[in-house]
Image (cartoon, rainbow, N blue to C red; front, top):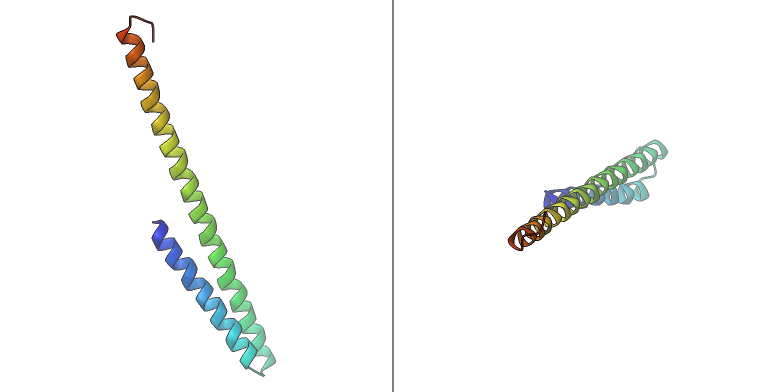
Length: 87
């Protein structure tokens, strides 16, 4: 999923840059304003994808940490039970 998001982020940033280039080339004030608005929207969308990507990384990391702690706790409990100690 992260690779897909990275692709979307890059595509949004490319479109934003294209809007900026086109805005710089036009002499029509209304068209320039529209293109700069579209640039801002593409940039905002890229930022939204970046947020989702960072959230996904956080969730995956938390899940891995939880699984690691569960395995470690199970190992400790098994070791204690093997030595006649209470879990």
